[in-house]
Amino acid sequence: MILADAGYETAGSGILTTIKRLQEVAPERLHHDTQAYNLLLRGLRSIGERAMAALTGQWRLLRHTTKSPSRIGAIVKAALTLTLLDKETR
Image (tube, rainbow, N blue to C red; front, side, top):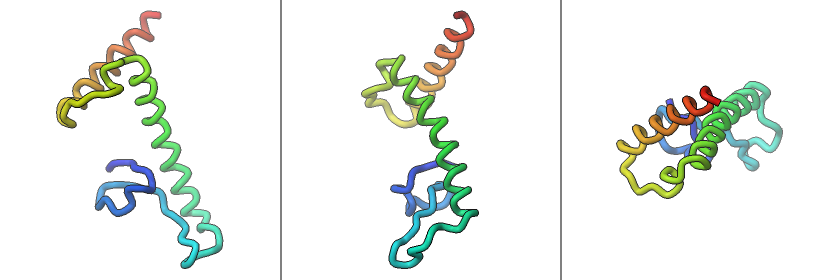
């Protein structure tokens, strides 16, 4: 499963996005279950976004990379490992 923002709602199966309220179809508020789902999804996404912001702030290479998606995953894993090791030694 991949967590994505609402802009990727038609991306396909396996992509979890928040559920939008369509003004013309349902002008009232979203059902409380849907609101809870959206809140949980936003909370999970925010963890990943904060982590990536911390990594790109510390590792200049990650700011403007032109590496292929298959290679950037290994680079991000290495940067995360080094960042966590650095925090443990402090």
